[in-house]
Length: 232
Image 1 (cartoon, helix red, strand yellow):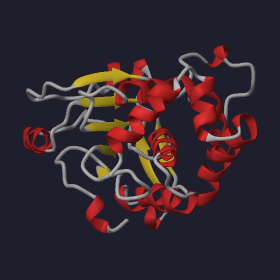
Image 2 (cartoon, helix red, strand yellow):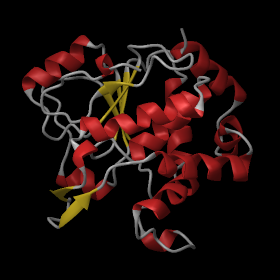
Image 3 (cartoon, one colour):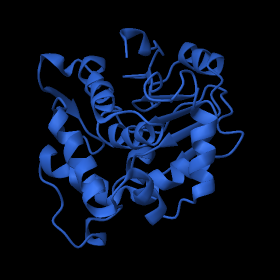
Image 4 (cartoon, helix red, strand yellow):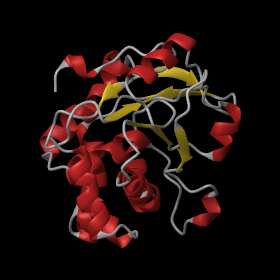
């Protein structure tokens, strides 16, 4: 992908086209950070892109704290959290760092990603945006699965994944930020090994990306519909 994948949407960080690799065409699937600081001009530009569906991968608490802004946009908004709502809902230790987060996400995100696929199979879903808080980790995994489903190689997927470092100013190193609880934290760059660990977990446990999605209830007809609707 080239730098023209990035699109300036005022008030939205790291907004870019997820297409142009594999069979995934441009102009149908985008990725970004949240819309909680979206401006009216940003909304006009989203409308011009034909936005119909927004998949928000954040937690309910994040949504309550930083709700997406619409400014008159009439898209469908679906909240499909990547991570469990309660740490007690999982029978393994909660990840303490980025390296542990990625295989953990692969394990817990299946229902969320499958729900994204099912909605994208519908004829009225496009154009769509997948976002989390900054469009880096949770969005990165979800988009990687969709790009893989559309035939992109792991090298192509990883190249797009790493673009978040540029889109978020992390290409120069970690940066501080304030999370939804008001706590100051450090946002760290992504690297190829992180995404590789997620994809390895999927392949080790389910064989293939389609196998992973089928395990979480996606039908072959839905997979075929997504391939048809999003491909060149």
